[in-house]
Structure formats: structure tokens, C-alpha cells
Image (cartoon, rainbow, N blue to C red; front, side, top):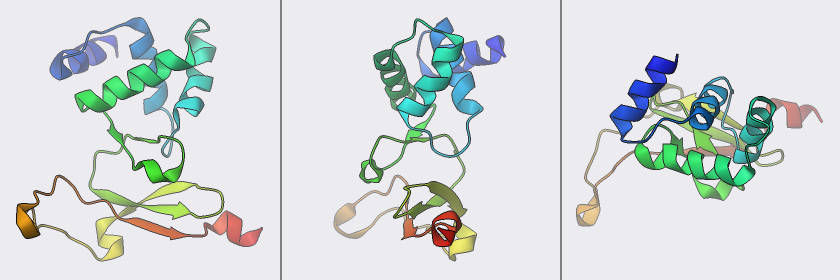
Length: 138
């Protein structure tokens, strides 16, 4: 795993450190779209000296370098997108849980890369807002 992470860092132009490797491995093992605070709680168990600021800084570095993607900010706290496949999100308006949903399930297949006024599309992101099954039962 260390050789893979070393290569990933080299490919994305960032220095490999032990804390970054632990952070990356923790995030890869998490489901959903974790917030930095959720990541920090797990990383701290493996690297007790790590600070929340270091976790934030390195998450932003991973996002800026293209290793991960950042989800829209309007979900509250910053959430990290680790799924690199084309997909969209179902967001619970009550508990704020975020779940991936495929383009086919939504009946979408956006292929237009240039919109009006020459707007160049980088990616499409659709949020389906509603109540998750758990909140509906409550």
C-alpha cells in the first residue's frame, strides 16, 4: 500500500508523508461523503498527535491535487467526494445524509460540454433533495 500511495503522491505532485498516508487510507475506508471532523476522529486514533487543522489542510491538498473531489458547500460542512465515477447525490433535508445515485437511475446522460455564452462544463452535479428512508420512519 505504501508504494501505491507513494506513486499516487508522485502522480499528483505532492510530497508523501506518514500523516497523509494514514489520512488517505482512513478516507478510502470510509463510506459516504465524510466531513473533515469525521475523518479527524478516525485519523486521531492512528496518529494521536494529528490536529484538526492538519486534517483540513491535507484534505484540501488532496482536493486541489485531484486525488479527491469536494462536494458543494451548501450541504453544511465541507464533504469529500471519493467516488470518481459519474454520479449525483440524494441529500436528506432532515439529517443531511448524502447518498450517491447513478446517472442512469436519474435518467440522465449529460454529454453537452459547452453551454450558452460559451460556458465550458467540467462536470455535472445534481442534488436530489428529500427525506431518506430512516427519517421517513422517524
